[in-house]
Figure 1 (tube, one colour):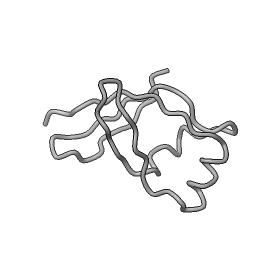
Figure 2 (cartoon, one colour):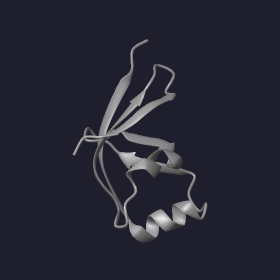
Figure 3 (cartoon, helix red, strand yellow):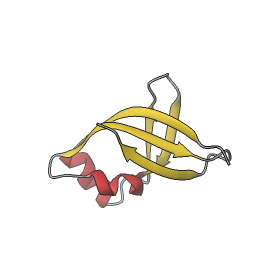
Length: 75
């Protein structure tokens, strides 16, 4: 099965991350480097949350049916 890869920058403040943990957000919508809008479940950012929030460039991997495979921080 071939996966699709989307690259994007993500910057979330500490406060935005707190709002996520409070359940105010269930998904995150980002604009990829090539201008495609992609949405994925917010709980996938949990491993990347620090005391400052989330900051970096990421790759989102989806299968051919647009099902989540992985989210990786690349910078």
